[in-house]
Image 1 (tube, rainbow, N blue to C red):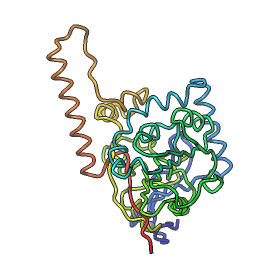
Image 2 (image 1 turned 60 degrees about the horizontal axis):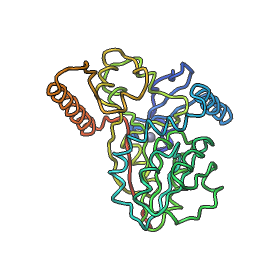
Image 3 (image 1 turned 30 degrees about the vertical axis):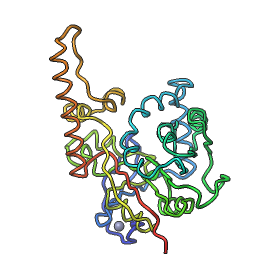
Image 4 (image 1 turned 60 degrees about the vertical axis):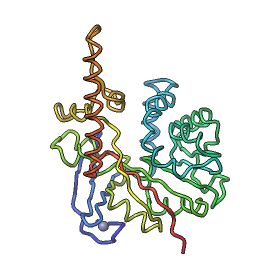
Length: 314
Ligand SMILES: [Zn+2]
């Protein structure tokens, strides 16, 4: 397979089986460090897959789905906010593409003049618009009335890996940046410790997803951004906590829900256990979690990578 970044065919296969057991070859260019899904899905089939997935989620939890998403993920926007806040001000406009139920926009809107969202899922978009008191479009950016060169920050979290043509996607987004504006792109990290360092055969299959058309590392994400004329820096962000990873290591399976893994790690204390002991144990696990996350970041093996950069004007 020809690598779209270097245009050479030096790829080898990473996996032939994806998360739901469906067939799909993930090729890997070792020079660019880019994973490429050669899926069997056509555009039409992928749309159907998304629609079915969303329907499935909705029947499980009735209408609460966007609200549930919001409540789970709203608490875990602090890394993104910390890294992006230096670029925000009360005079600036922010656009989020793939804003889901609005969990980032909700926190970010306090720091900017105006927020706007885009998300193809109608119910999430509707929820986000209401929750954040802003406009959320459900079409591609070129079909919205948004004007070019009008946003000071454009962010897209966990979206690029779903897009057919990442280079065209980034290039188009940068056209909506005001002079000096920043673009922030977050994707899952192919070098995630669970997939790349620990020997966990079930996680390996769990990691590769039918809807993820691309797998990036710091190197491939930076090469892509450079190709689009964007210069900047990659930050390493870890979402799941140390207890979730120990669960994976011991059992080679995910926890029954994502909530405890995404929350601060806690021990299940018996009622009446000495307060002082509880406090000391809680301090231990909080410190251990922070140290673990720092170690993963130092070794570039976190779950996510977030690139923040500016378009280089010629
Ligand atoms: Zn390549």
